[in-house]
Image 1 (cartoon, rainbow, N blue to C red):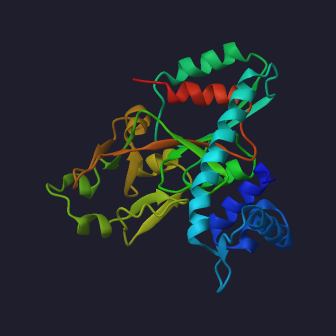
Image 2 (image 1 turned 180 degrees about the horizontal axis):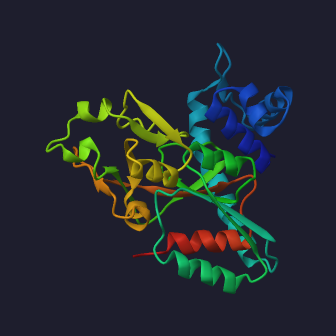
Image 3 (image 1 turned 90 degrees about the horizontal axis):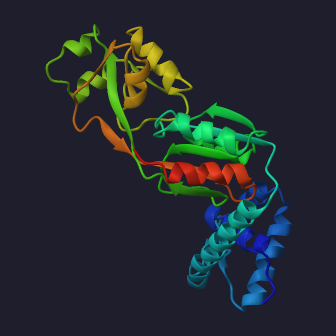
Length: 286
């Protein structure tokens, strides 16, 4: 068989999106190119990978079997590329990171100090983003590495790795807010009181009937400090920047531990400094 890594990636994207045209848009290729690539791959294998009837292109039984193996091949290729980058003498001139405020890595200052010492000529950019915005910045090459609340599925072009320590989110309100005076908070209290929430997320755990939005957690914290409503906020952020004006709402199982992932692009992976930072964060402990 004669297939390339690009062919395998095209197959995975088409399988993930269940559409050759959607895969073509994602890969910035023509639909005919994607279609011929898949057809050529099927010819090499000797069997059909997709059911092409209907509006969606779904995998056949054989296609599902092949997908599992192809994902293993691409994962091994990704690890090989990471090792190659790690062993290269050249360092990328710029490293941009899009990190969620949901989690503050332990010894963050030490990690950045070591990064500066390890790569003294590196230009470093730190960006704040949440949820889908992190993914989009990685895909649009605005950031090389991202950190975000973990999810069950990622786009086929995104690599991810779970951090060893969880973040924590709680429900917070100004200490003089009416909710702070309630002895027992109910779901109705929360739904009938204004929620301050992220613009980039539905925060579907609790859906209030009244909402104000902000692009990041720090702005939500400032709005909560003004008494504008209650908010789901990272515990560490409240402790560090809340000026002792916010109190935790004791409701249900809150505060909650949240898994956090590092993410980066398979198509445009980080350079030597980027992988160094990824490894440092994955091996950081309290």
